[in-house]
Image 1 (cartoon, helix red, strand yellow):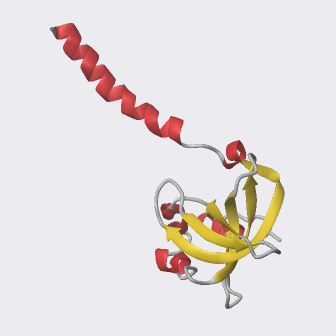
Image 2 (cartoon, rainbow, N blue to C red):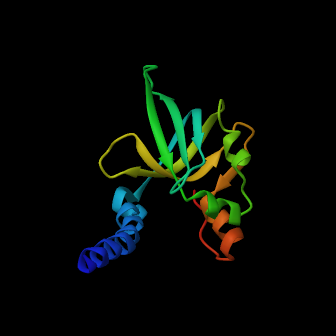
Length: 142
């Protein structure tokens, strides 16, 4: 009985520690880091959730056909450290916005956003936010 108790205790202690490691990924594991994309569409939803915030867009092609795209970025805590609050990103809902970022390696309508430009011309740019949050100097995205 004591061995069973120790085994259950070990499983309950160490199994949860393995979950975050297996669930998280580096952007380079999913996204094509060598090819950037710029895409414009109507923002339909912002999800301010862990482990990544998500932006959902309806994007029209030249023929007028709408495709749904999802872009992820860093977690909410990262944005809060940079002084960006949920409402700063959520204001995109209902706006035609421009996303600059990375496309998924598998070619699906999924990406990683580095910059959001709102209808009023204001933008949130990953590199400048990193400078604010962590005092690092990076090259600005184009």
